[in-house]
Image 1 (cartoon, protein in one colour):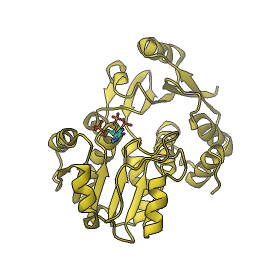
Image 2 (cartoon, rainbow, N blue to C red):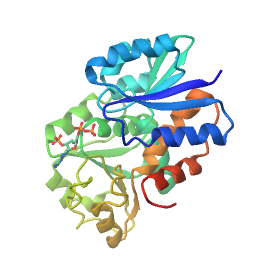
Image 3 (cartoon, protein in one colour):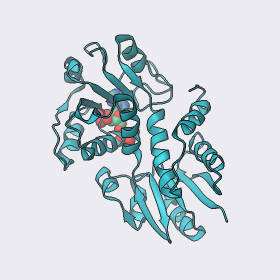
Image 4 (cartoon, rainbow, N blue to C red):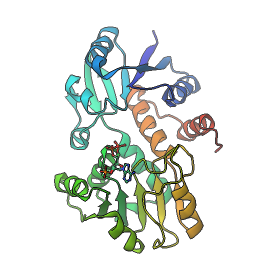
Length: 279
Ligand code: ATR
């Protein structure tokens, strides 16, 4: 009998996960199927009961359920607890185990661009919301040496830093301070939604003081190349968009569910095609 997987989110109409995972199931000859379920926040508890009753083998969780889902699971992995959010659930013999593959997915894609020693580089994260937390906690766990956080609301950046249990050098900065000192950083990551369609003219941070050769990573993939990345590229940055993080989190989830390594490059191609780009 085939195994069923899914996504719980609201809305889920534009999700690329079903196409990406279903393509891998058929490509690898696995009898699996992935469906996106639009679950209203009021129905989340019932949805999880349904998943238990129907015996889904695993599922992803996306906006707005990543935090709320935690109270309906049986066990939560330490990294997901530290991040404070779950995006991947595995059903093992009727018990639901929660994980977070967002930060790791991002780290894998960053390492692909920045090289093996990327954790020794001085990094700046722009933003201090849920996405920033996932990336910051994961990179800190992996042993990153220095990560500063710049945010419109500086107190939120301070809060993120204060809650982190790992030894890392980290300062909270205003956007203006970060802009003035941008030449210090070798890797700069935008985790805010600033620049996302339809407000594509906005920049999360001015890049005037960035050094050429800096790695610039934007977790946005809509548009595929934000104005911020375009401007960075013109100054000589090496850039990446959010497709790598999206594919990375999905590939890690797929492997947890099936114990098979998915074809990362093919996943990326499928997602790029769906987004109207090419790879
Ligand atoms: P997510 O879970 O996607 O990270 P979030 O938790 O709402 O979403 O966090 C959004 C982040 O983007 C925050 O860092 C937010 O800054 P504030 O903490 O000051 O709210 C940042 N952000 C969103 N819109 C912004 C804007 N127009 N200008 C600057 N920062 C913005």
